[in-house]
Length: 380
Image 1 (cartoon, helix red, strand yellow):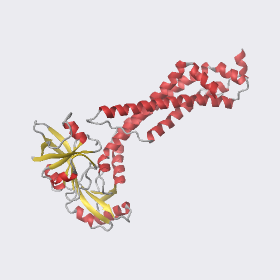
Image 2 (cartoon, rainbow, N blue to C red):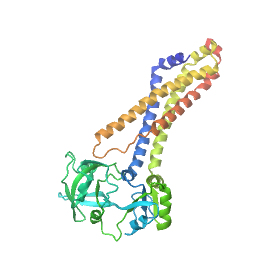
Image 3 (cartoon, rainbow, N blue to C red):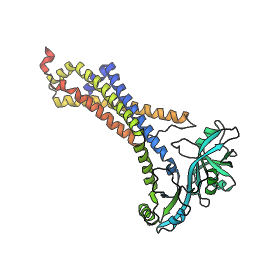
Image 4 (cartoon, one colour):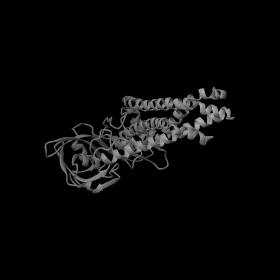
């Protein structure tokens, strides 16, 4: 009977292709927009994920996300080091700087000043040069995306020189770094060098990076830091979700992308539901003949659901394939500023659930006429 149902479904090729197209389009739209949303949220926390080595971030209690910086006092690092359970703590500067190039142009930079002794938080993958090159005078390391943005078409190489806050910066290497939300180039340098590139302020310490004792949970160490110093301390995961929560609450990004995903679901349901209903109505005589031959309503329901799951599976595969292809093409073509997309495993799962709801709802909506059909009406 399932084979008969599929033959009935593919017999009318126009309606069959219309249902598949509607589901594929809805699937592609939901998956692609969801991947862009997750990609944007990942970009907001890229510098937290790239800062390896420490598992605790210490900051002013007023900070709400990674770019909301309230400078700490100069002795904050030493106060954190004195907390029981803290294995070590180092300083970190994060800020924006404006670079002047020989052509007379200016560009904004994200400046990260690492601890001059340990370089905790340094990039994990160097493409040109090494972290040890930061010990040279005026040395900075730039991220790959920033280098390609500033000098498109040129090979990755050291030796690029520019000025920041009337101080010379000499590029000693190029590293791999995750794309940021602002898409500004990133430079890494020593802490004392970074504060020369920054506008003059009385306080320049942005964060304290700390590591707890191996036998103590990080959250317990964070609580100890807060009790003793009054500064807010959070784990890497806590700071990540704190940043994402800020953008979810204070920007229109979730509403905009959520509306698009909802529209994709509604469009897919409308196209698939209407076409499936017309297809079922057009085959009432065939269903009536099957009921006259002894097919029960339960078997008819199974046939219609099988038809729905068949077109749903095809539409899902086509839609996800198209969404993945679009993301791949964008990543290959856009080398200077990569697209903010990330196809997390939750997206195909959630899209599959949405497609299942669409096809089952469409199939059940068209069943009422079939279940109330009298077999004798076929012979009239």
